[in-house]
Length: 153
Image (cartoon, one colour):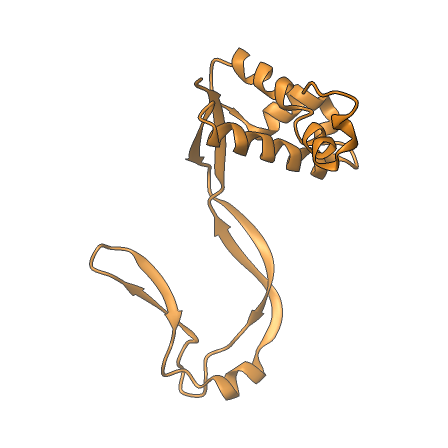
């Protein structure tokens, strides 16, 4: 970004220079790619190994996300989402037992289009059962979404 010494005295200009510092490097990297690439691959191509192995890693990732979002809104790049392989993780969660009548706290319901939802059980006695609950580790299966980017302009 080219500005005069006088324009640099404005805070908004300094902020704009700082925010657009890596845009040209990202554009140059994306133009060279023939297949869609992930944000991490772009970050390592622009910043090197410090993108993922530095105390500044989160800052670099935030800057990369901002640049990619603006390039996508401007129509310069296209983002595609693909589902990854399901993985199992452990999370800390409040585990609520069935109430005194054997009613579970949540129900699984299905609609006419085959979708599945979890809703609160209206017959569940929350007063008693919530007091008997406890914190514990629960295994959950998640399907990660991987975003890839490709230059289109």
